[in-house]
Amino acid sequence: MGPVTPAADAPVLDVSGLAYAYPDGHQALFGVDLTVRRGERVALLGPNGAGKTTLVLHLNGILTAGAGTVRVGGLPVGKDTMAEIRRRVGIVFQDPDDQLFMPTVREDVAFGPANAGLRGAELEACVTRALERVGMAAHADRPPHHLSFGQRRRVAVATVLAMDPQILVLDEPSANLDPAARRELADILLSLDLTVLMVTHDLPYALELCPRSVILSDGVLAADGPTGELLADAELLGRHRLELPFGFDPSAARR
Image (tube, rainbow, N blue to C red; front, side, top):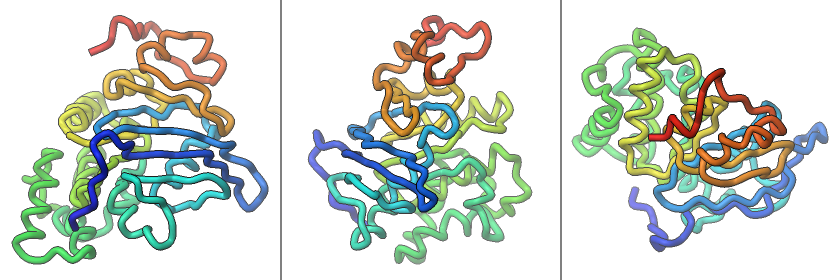
């Protein structure tokens, strides 16, 4: 499973001129350019219908571009590279039940690495390591449906970490979590030495976890900069239908 590692200064994600129209003719992306360096944590912000999901689904080839290119660690997304791209880009979907389908937590986390050829002690070590990273090793033999929603989301993250991805993509990671589970997940995500792209409407969570944010609006990249600066720009947020919680002051909340 050893990937080819690009040069340290090469972007781990390079999206260039990405445009996409759905079969019904709806144009979702209009020439998006986005570069993410290794180890960056970037929030992808924008109103519903902005094209965020369409962009994310191009990152591991679930959708393929009508125009433009996507490269992960220098490798172009395409039919011939799909298996390696899907190992490099791990997507954690909003509903963990979309990713957890085996009888036990251990089997869910083992599913991807086993399909990639890991066996025996090497597979067991991989599963244990992934579960330890999300604080769920003690629950390895439990059925996923017996866990809380927050625990299931952490196991969903472990299923992706087990594949040793270069990029962790999270779709609304704080959605439907109680405050304690939200905090636990934040601590886990901050502890990971990974490139993270986080799609979220939760602007305080973006500020806490991601030093950089980009705003996607009407299929184009409307802003890209330090999260605190973007969230302090009330006119920018209003123009793109983004709202901070009442009374939240981004300048006072930075870690």
